Length: 145
Image (cartoon, rainbow, N blue to C red; front, side):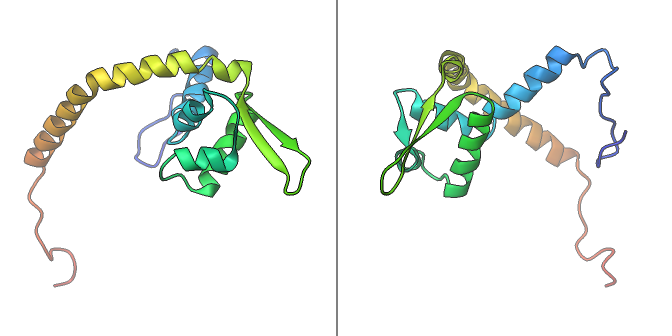
């Protein structure tokens, strides 16, 4: 099977793609998305209401917070508790499984902080080399001018 860039995807039968590898990739996709780390961190000190979580995570929209919480709930990392009242009270809390994410995420955060500058330097070096290797672009060529 070919992807949009013309390369090929690894198929299930390929040696590098084991069921364990796919499981790891699936979990990393969940915890590595744009907002999950922030939500887990905000819930690490106890249950919070939706508005409390939204208030402590700068830049997250209501829709993205809802989608992130639903994904975390679906995967068993978060519980959603509705308390009947007017208006209904909804609290979110890390499950036992969700709490097991805190330490690994802290370690990844420490690693990222320690190595951030090296990664940024590598990106700059790569981008500079790629820009120097790229052929010059001619303005207006191929546009019927």
